[in-house]
Image 1 (spheres, rainbow, N blue to C red):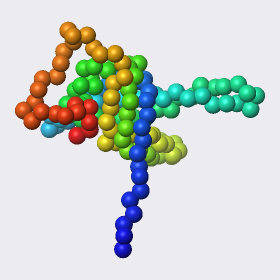
Image 2: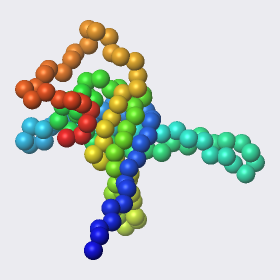
Image 3: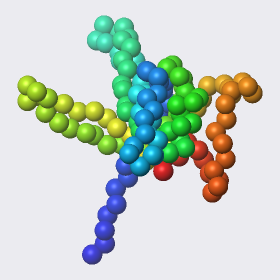
Image 4: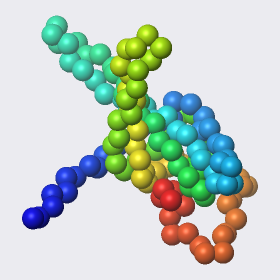
Length: 135
């Protein structure tokens, strides 16, 4: 029997709605949480347009997490590609809630290059082809 593998891929450009949140796990691995807002317009029945923003949560790990914490700020523009996940739960009032997550994400900053006097991540022993690819 042949197996079928569906495609789960998302690419978007947007901006950070808050500063990156860097923390470290018990094993020392860095984790950076990012909230990406994507603007769009919706046409109303009367012909006018309303701005809407969709929010996506992204987690970066390891050196990619440290890079994001060093160089990204609230309002930074980024491009993201990865797999879309929906996390569902019930709140305290037993109402269904959900949030959109992008896993296995590759993130590319779209803002200008930082000035030469800003800190640079040190080289690691193994090297790293793309410091913004999820580990």
